[in-house]
Amino acid sequence: MREDDLEEADRIMRLAFGTFIGLPDPMSFAGDADYVYTRYRADPPAALVAEIDGKIAGSNFALHWGSVGVFGPLTVHPDFWDKGVARLLLEGTMDVFAKWQVSHAGLFTFAQSSKHVHLYQKFGFWPRFLTSIMSKPVDKNQSAARMIRYSQLAAAEKEQTVKACKALTGTIYDGLDLKTEIYSVDKQALGDTILIYDNDNADSLAGFAVCHCGPGTEAGSGNCYVKFGAAAPGQDSAGERFEHLLDGCESFAGSQGLSRIIAGVNTGRHDAYKRMIARKFRTDIQGVAMHRPDEPGYNRKDVYLMDDWR
Image (cartoon, rainbow, N blue to C red; front, top):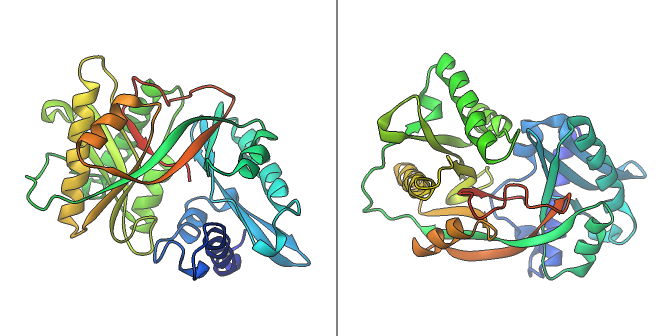
């Protein structure tokens, strides 16, 4: 993908999803949220297009999370559905994953669509637990949570923080690393990364969340979207840390004047899912997580983590 492909790739993405889900105006899909420009600028070599007669027919975006690879949105112009374009994009994406040497790969797709599930199975992806994309109104009366914002750190502190985030996620799944997302949000001014610490100890990172805010990001107007958030594991404390991280995300959203917080959670992380329900998060979209290989990865009961493989 090139910079001059972005406008058409964005148009096709909205048209494809809007048509698939049956919107009266397919181009209204996602409103003023963005999934094309920001993902391209985060990692241009990981953004792919398929062309027919010199014109873009579809696109896909690979996300490099250390030992984990995620892709999407994969979209094809409706005129070229069922003509092998998605297969070509997937072949290119698998080449990217091979170059990165990821040990686990995943995607989010429509659970009700046997066509999509069957396509991804051909590439070794298998459906496991559902993922709920959840949201709730921001509580304007909530007390400010103790947290630190990545954007407010000095340059040297930022590098140490990225290393600490990698160490935290590495205890959840070996090699899991969100530095690309942290850097992207900071460089593109898409929102911020929220950091919480055990007992206000700056040497003990308890959790972090990469958040997009408002229009032109993956959040959209009025929204704080948690692209990824994780609490440090620990048999007796992980759940409590997760609660503190949710407090931090909501407090941050309120400080930005946003009215809604959005986050995804795989139902394989059962207690994290239950805690979000208890906090009045409600499911807006539900899909199935597909994994390669057919293993849980970090979607386990002992993991307190929010993410979204769309």
